Image (tube, rainbow, N blue to C red; front, side, top):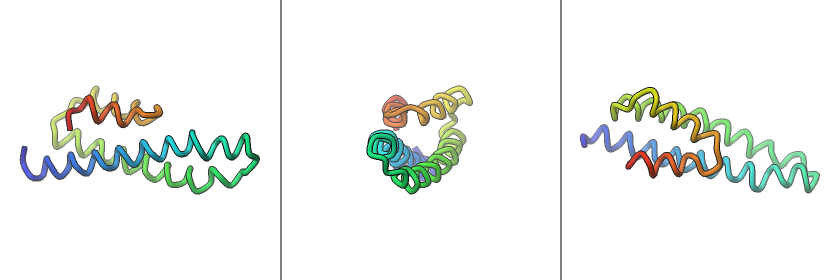
Amino acid sequence: MSSDSALTAKWFTWIARLEGVSLLLLFGVAMPLKYVGGIAEATVWTGWAHGCLFLVYLVALDSQRRVAGWSLGWAAVGFVASLLPLGTFLFEWKSDL
């Protein structure tokens, strides 16, 4: 594995983890606070942070796809994984990064 490939894989791994944590915080903390606790502001910052991390994740996924030679199909699996709770963690595990 070249140094560029290793750096891209490390960057992708950390972005995927952060995006996964932000999704879990949004679904597990902010949304219950909003809908059960009546605190409408709970999703504002969490949702904003998750949205930004999601976009960065898509850029990282495409970079990793190009550097590692992944197929578009495998990248599509990575995209779908980002929409599911714990999906990015499972995708990272299955990708052998």
